[in-house]
Amino acid sequence: NTGLADSAGGAFLTIQKALDVLGDSIDFGGYAVVVQVRDGTFTGAVSIPPMVGMNAITDLTLRGNTGTPANCIISTTSSDAIGAESNAQIAIEGFKIQTTTSGYGVITQDIALIRLGVMDFGACATAHMVAFGGFIHRTANYTISGASPYHLDAELGGLITTPYAGITITVTGTPNFSGSFALCGDGSQINDGQSTYSGGATGK
Image (cartoon, rainbow, N blue to C red):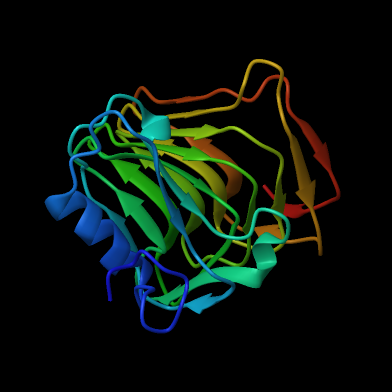
């Protein structure tokens, strides 16, 4: 399939196929590109490759269902749901993220940057979002609907931020954070001074 039409004969089967085609053969040339993902449950891990001809992180957006993220699920077993490394940059919005057995929900490494829009973080085996020497910028209100050892984890010079005006994080179902809700070490930063939280959780 070409990936250029929303049909059985046009759409790519997997999210990874769409990203691989963009990374391998498309020079963005300053234009913005959106990968639109239909509702459903996708069980393949998503790895964000570095793109060609990008001028800003808004040049590439991976978009699910921004009205109801829980209808567009990335659910993996023994692997990270979404990962970016080696200076890859992308905006991601409209997904529910969950992992079982092992694996992070969203992870950035090696100065990669992910901008997270509206999302739903379900149960994750290791952590909801991790910046290991990479960057995560949370740009919109989102939901936490499942437990994880950690919600925010910044290590090895990683950075997790929100806009200066803050966002609203809605916590549903009283999830447990057995490690801690937020963990920061090794010269990293978590900036969340203006955000508002509603709902309740247990753990550290």
